[in-house]
Each structure stands twice: as structure tokens, then as C-alpha cells.
Image 1 (cartoon, one colour):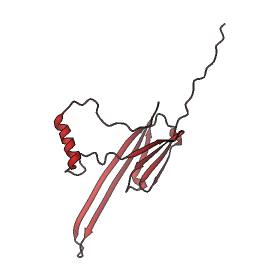
Image 2 (image 1 turned 90 degrees about the horizontal axis):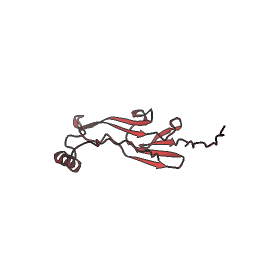
Image 3 (image 1 turned 120 degrees about the vertical axis):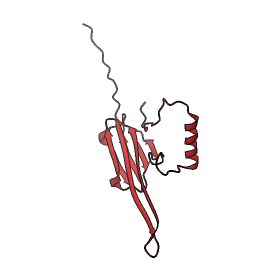
Image 4 (image 1 turned 60 degrees about the vertical axis):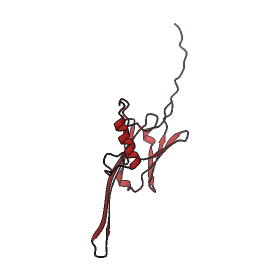
Length: 151
């Protein structure tokens, strides 16, 4: 049975490496000391997928993005959701000197399998930091039965 789900990005052929696993544990526990580089923090975003019977509803949290920064692409049976953020924040003192400057950049991307979805009927809406997609299911075609006459 088809189920709308994101593709996994894990390599199933990796061998056991305790040093790599300890490094990953340390990064997850203490945070990444090098900022966004080498971290999966910005590579994925959280989604909820609900089956409403005749369609799927996908809701993705993308706070702080403008509509023009979110891109939805369908290639075959794959839906790609991409979002890119560029922001700058500056604080100045009373003499207009910069006291603190924070700049961030990040991009998100997730791919979803659409093999059970009718791509022409997909609708998308972005409001209050949540991307909402309505994905109608393909109508299952039941095989027809017939009786053949022997000659």
C-alpha cells in the first residue's frame, strides 16, 4: 500500500565506526561549535502528513520565510520542497557604531514520494510560517474481469 513519506537520506551500507558515532553524539549533545557548517540543523524541516481519505495533507514548518523564497518542484514522482533564508541583524549604540552583528544563511530541502498522488490536483498555500499542501490521491483502477468464449 502506498504511503506518502519523505525519502530517507541515510546510507544503509555504512559500517560500524565508534568514533564517528561518538562525534555525532557529541555534536547532538553539545551543539555544533562551527555554526551551521556540517550540521543537519538547516538541511531538514519538520512535516506532518495526514491521510484524509481521498487526499493527503502535508504541513511543513518554515517560519521566517517569504513566499518567494520557497520553491516547489515536481520531477516525475518526486516533490522537492526547497526554502532559502538570507537575513541580517545589526545593533548600533547611540553613536551609530555597530555593537553586534548577526548574519545567517540557510537552505532547507526535502523530497517526497508522489507515486500515489495525482500531481495535477496538488495545491499549495503558505501562511503564518506553515506551508500546507493538499495532495489528492490517485484513483485506484480495479482490474476488469470478463469471460472469454471458447471457439
